[in-house]
Amino acid sequence: QVQLVESGGGLVQAGGSLRLSCAASGSIFSISTMGWYRQNPGKQRELVAAITNTGTPIYADSVKGRFTISRDNAKNTVYLQMNSLKPEDTAVYYCNAKPTGWTGINYWGQGTQVTVSS
Image 1: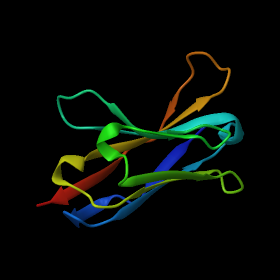
Image 2: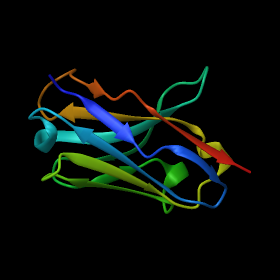
Image 3: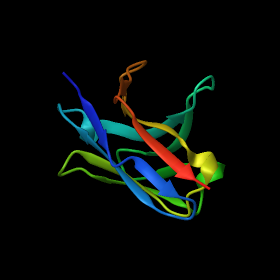
């Protein structure tokens, strides 16, 4: 059984910072691309950032230069450091795990709310 548990969301003023964490149980972490997605009501879930099992990061254009994704394989944890936050970053943020080579298999966390006030 794979579980992803996010933490670190909250309310912050524009220009502030938050760090999200996602702890993964099970044995898939080291073989997975780990990602952070976000979603607002009535909108599609969108990729914010991802990091491959070999440590290569990928970022949405809207967060490049402001967000940093990292992973600690020893702790089975992926992080998203969010700086210079903007009101448009407000969303529910979801952690995602895609095990390499497991076609069509995805795991999701329960989501954590990030609210950026102007």
